[in-house]
Image (cartoon, rainbow, N blue to C red; front, side, top):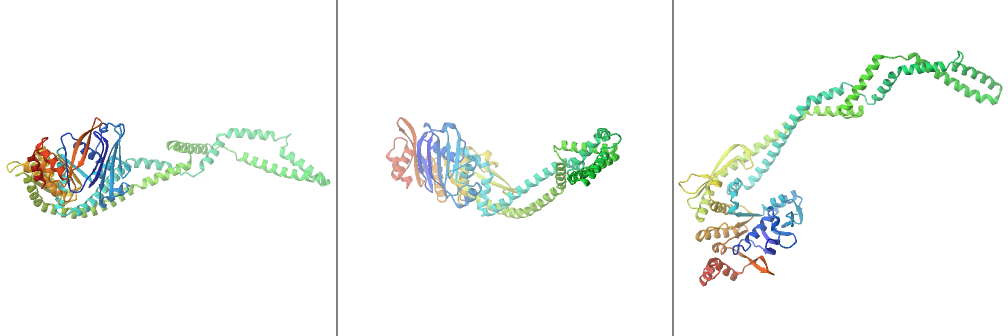
Length: 549
């Protein structure tokens, strides 16, 4: 229930505070006094969209704040949206001068759809303009299930249905992914084979390039070796032979002079090194040959490796090997799609068994509750001058599951015994729709803890006995839930547990809207005013007192 409403700088309201009570409260006042402004403020904290023109004359933002008493059953909502739960929860909207708005729940900023989702569980506005609700079958399912005493069963079914929907979506997602995968499978397999056939070894590109460069420069190397041979000859004697002779001479000197012995050892080392070097070069020259086939083979392999690296945007054989392994994993994943789909289908079938059992029970109980509900509706209709009107529930079972089980519900309306029953949302007039919806909610309120109901002049166009019935029904509803009714009828206002008057006043040449909670004497005066108009008569006062009794 709503405990407090605070409004600042909203159209004609500079600053207004209202403390609401449990039960049935009536809001009255002259036409244009600002009752619709207060309703608009309630709509704001319910998440409705705003127009910057609602910001008042003060050069500051508009703030509407409502404090609600809520139950622990909403704790999951707060956990899901990562909000602090408090049984005294405050919903706030702030509208800036440029029309931009911000929403808060317990001082935490939230998106508009979150405050809207929460407010739907806390407050429900009912007016002739809101009679489109009659086309929402959830209202009728709630009515059937509350009378069938299976609200908890429905909650259990809806949990199953939520999982059922998620699994179905997941199956379709994987199936689409599999189709897309299969489209690319052959191409990816080709890419894999292309790399696999090269039998790549990490680091081999260095060896290949070295061999390739040697073969590519064969002629230059051979020419330079020939030049080396020419330079190494001194009068038909090689440098190596000449150094060997010099080394022998040095050795002879070293045997004769201790001072020369170290030079002798150094020449021995040079001589050995030169012999080994010239032998190695000689062997290299003897083995040196150009293999055209091997050259072309190495060249072709390097070209293939380079082409593949460019194709995949890579820069080394290691990266190509990694790409091959990645493609292998991708190709091997083809079987995993079917494994996942089969697993999900098994879960889906298990859910179907549970859902079918529950939905059959739900459907049977709904059918059994229809006569009772229709009887209650007829009683309510008689009070609301809808005598001989009927609401007919056509409930059929379907093959497919939906959020309400396996039922397909059609609600028809017949205004009299001779008229054909047609779709309720299409055939009833505006006034009829409003009274029908009121009747349905009054019946639903007997079984379900509805949110605070705000009735906006739904008694418009009625008077006398009908107005008296509407007021009486609201009073009964108020014993179980909080009712706020904006009304122009004395018969309705007199039935209220609490009475608030909305009025305009002039302060510093400015017209502002205010609201006061009336005491008993003030109520008599206000109801008398509603009966007789501006000139309150003694008769009107007596009539008002009688109504209040």
